[in-house]
Length: 106
Image (tube, rainbow, N blue to C red; front, top):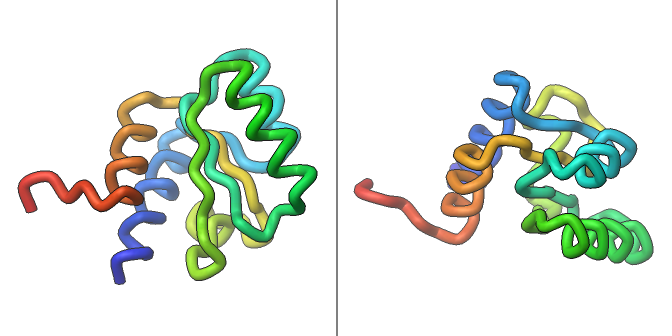
């Protein structure tokens, strides 16, 4: 259930229009400095992961690798999507806290 709640926040960000789905949209968002946090599925090829890690470093976005147990595409209603860029700093911080075990006051 814990991994589900992690992805719920990603889905919420996407439905709120605060996330970009797919590698083309993610790259464009990074280059325009709109992406605060980039979530990548661990099944992405090494080359693709490396390319996006370099882009994130260059344009100041954080990176989070999502495990195979977490279905990133399904969380946003687009099965098969393996890369999501979060464009809202509040959502980005909440997602990072969820993934790093920060449960707040709960």
